[in-house]
Length: 286
Ligand SMILES: Cc1ncc(C[n+]2csc(CCOP(=O)(O)OP(=O)(O)O)c2C)c(N)n1
Ligand code: SF4
Ligand SMILES: [Mg+2]
Image 1 (cartoon, rainbow, N blue to C red):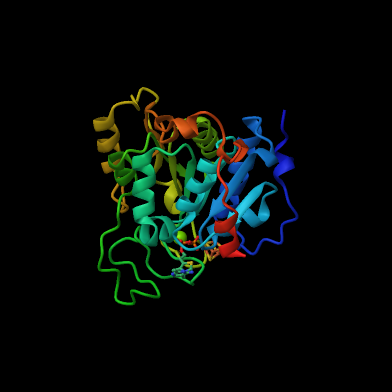
Image 2 (image 1 turned 90 degrees about the vertical axis):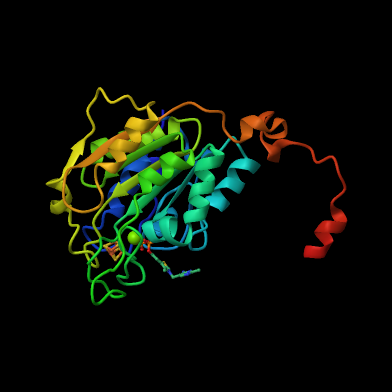
């Protein structure tokens, strides 16, 4: 039995009051605790952005990485120590802009980890530039005459790239969000959750009220093993007005990256005795 408060840390948090990042942090703590995972058995890896500061404020292993590179770092951690529960987190700029290739490759490899994107549809930390999920026409610091580009659809990218768990959450529905995070962490394979949330300071358009009027949980009879249905559900919302489905879009069981490699499937690499003399190599780095 693990209490969510075990994940609490003295929080000198600098997020703006009302920021959606708070809900994701709470959902993550509650989900890890409900799964009985102890802080020393889990690691949170992030990139750079307001959302990527989360590891500083959680009592678990953490790695605040570099912009767009949360997933390669998280992959390395998982390959080295498969016994750890690995969660990667970051913003929409981090994951869908500079880190988009890593996102697609991680989906394709089906690495056994959870990736949570705090999608506020703006670059928050750098004070409000357009991100890959910003709507066309939106006026931001980098698009003073309106964003000329259409937003990308991260769910379509994840499903078509090979992710085996794909979901959309909303920071304003904590009960649903923590259920999604729990299921994602329990899933064996690459589990991805796009979390819609407000940036109260730099995205005045997509507020919590704006989302509340549009989000709608996916019907309970949705067959999430059906890829075509998942794709058409993902196409239902293009980032503009209209109903926004939330919940699990797609979930299947496929062998993970490590399952295909005998040297990884037979236990954590960090626990294996190194059968080689690497002292000369190490000396080069000293
Ligand atoms: C290689 C590199 N390029 C650019 C930056 C500047 N930078 C820092 S955070 C960021 C974007 C933040 O937006 P997002 O990832 O959506 O996170 P949020 O702050 O919205 O949570 C950028 C462009 C950087 N730190 N490193
Ligand atoms: S700038 Fe936006 S994303 Fe960053 S802490 Fe404030 S509300 Fe959150
Ligand atoms: Mg962002």
